[in-house]
Length: 231
Ligand code: SAM
Image: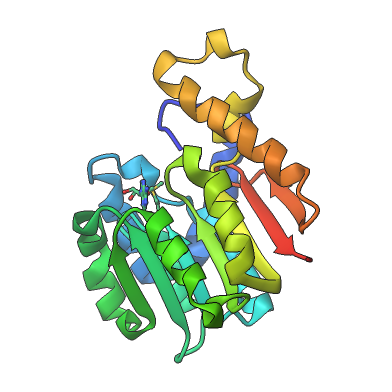
């Protein structure tokens, strides 16, 4: 998640090989343009990595996902990617506190002709999730949730999303390996990164022991934990 963090593969060369061989040549043009623009945007490193995006594309298609929710939009790489991989009448509830960043990616979303699939909500995510949960017609109706926002709220998001996503649906958490910091001794990690490290360790423990989901922690990008709701 951070430009200073080591790649989780521990080999820059291998990480470069993966993106140059399998990812960049197949990346849809508008996603490529948005990724390149985002690189020059403040905190541009926050964008979901294209190799994670590639895996998300396959998951969305395998699932025939139609109704999805995203927490943490930023400039919209994962949002545009989701919109490109759900049907014409698919819907994404996209939540972020930062409308300005969303508007950076909006022209790409419009150009792709997928804006009608997106309901962007400018707000902290928790109250929106709580509001969605108050309406029984929302329970167990989402096919897919992508979570890529404030790491210390992931467990709280999980407790809400587990009731919004249907049994058989997916909840996917980004940055769960945090550049490998989750296995570093705390004192070796730069002070500003320690709260993230602590939060992600707690998230990984919570997801690994949650009997309501089966999980796979994929060491792609910055770590992507794929949870399938089973109960
Ligand atoms: N998935 C995005 C992409 O593909 O570019 C990257 C998301 S970025 C890592 C994290 C985003 O979470 C930021 O845009 C930030 O504004 C948002 N965020 C942080 N705290 C939030 C909160 N409490 N509720 C909603 N969004 C939040």
